[in-house]
Amino acid sequence: AQKITQTQPGMFVQEKEAVTLDCTYDTSDPSYGLFWYKQPSSGEMIFLIYQGSYDQQNATEGRYSLNFQKARKSANLVISASQLGDSAMYFCAMRESKSGFQKLVFGTGTRLLVSP
Amino acid sequence: GAVVSQHPSRVICKSGTSVKIECRSLDFQATTMFWYRQFPKQSLMLMATSNEGSKATYEQGVEKDKFLINHASLTLSTLTVTSAHPEDSSFYICSASGGPGPASVEQFFGPGTRLTVL
Image (cartoon, rainbow over all chains, first blue to last red):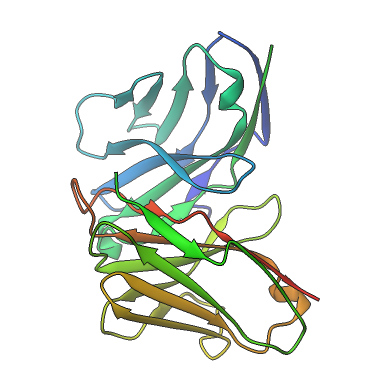
């Protein structure tokens, strides 16, 4: 079974609007971490936001917030006030304690296109 | 934040030759480094995990004799693609952990190396 599922291969949003990128995960480990990375066309992986499985509150980092619904095993990324520079691939990833919190497993990604 | 560099950023080689890619943590000591491969329009797939001073742990399906990983110091790991073939053409990305902040939380990624085998 896929550990990380991103069902949206592509998303379109207009500048200044908010967009939600979906991510569901599968794990039996009670302790895990969830990440979102942005990959622009240049290729580098840019860390956006992190959510620990025991964190009580949803993570926020500037315009990025993570809608963490533990019971549904979802960790959707919300980007508010989209900017043209947000156009990129976005990857959701998970790290489990059983791997010593080392191994990151990535989803297939969502390509976001922000239009003027 | 922590900086990880990769060299070269792009390499083109002939089939049958070996290519070495370096991954360096510039401002922190990386106890663990990771090597990923990303084919066009696909996700990152972990190839191997290396801890300084010990042998790398390879993921299932990754040939350790073809992809040689050396993590000789806390700031340098190398990936050597031996006897490269066109199907090895890919984007190779390293990451490192053990940097500033909660070390258990974040991996810092290098900018990647695009390998093209002719």
